[in-house]
Each structure stands twice: as structure tokens, then as C-alpha cells.
Image (cartoon, rainbow, N blue to C red; front, side, top):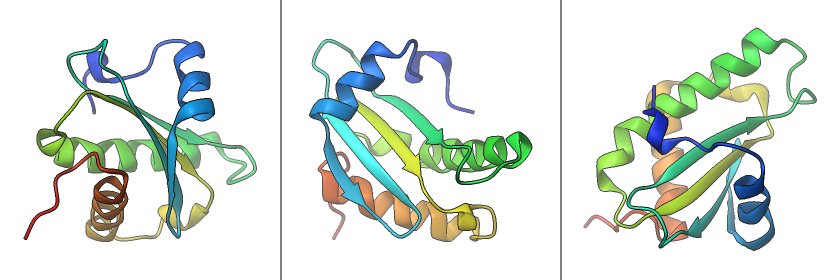
Length: 118
């Protein structure tokens, strides 16, 4: 699980990212990001609507899988960013972990959060 200092607290900052952030859309989820020079590190949130899956257990499983994927990429984040993943497909549950990490990495590179690797 991502440490407490790398998670959002309250709704105000989420609203700010939704209003001003840059969106990169993928097949399973969308990534919204906004640079935040006030912080020393990144903040990360995963939003899964009840429309995606009715079961809270399954929605939380999706969140945990994406938090884990982000944790594996956390050391490569080059600047303080606010990052919000919005899940819109319940295929996140069946998708292999390596494909989730690959998709997340691709979207973060496209958003300019991670440096491109040769």
C-alpha cells in the first residue's frame, strides 16, 4: 500500500486536479495529473465509481491492485505531482498485474510524470 504521505486527504485537492489536470485515457482507466510545487513528493488517488462494479469488495480490490502498481513505479516519479486514476472498466479485476503496470507506466510517461526509458 502507498504510504499515507502519498495519498490525498479531503476533496478539495481532488477537485483541483479534476478541474486543472491533464488527462491521458487508456483502455481501462484514465489518468489525470497536475504538477504540485507546494509538495515534496507525489500524491496518488484511485477513484472507482459504483457504476463500474456494485460490490464494494470488488471496487476496493481494484483500488488495491492499482495502488500496488503505482507503488512499483513510485521511485521513477521525477517531480511532485497530484495523480488521480479514474477506473471505468471492471476488467481491471481480470487483467494480469504486469499488464496493469505496463498500462499505468505508459499513461504516466505520456502525461510527463515518468521519464521516457530508451
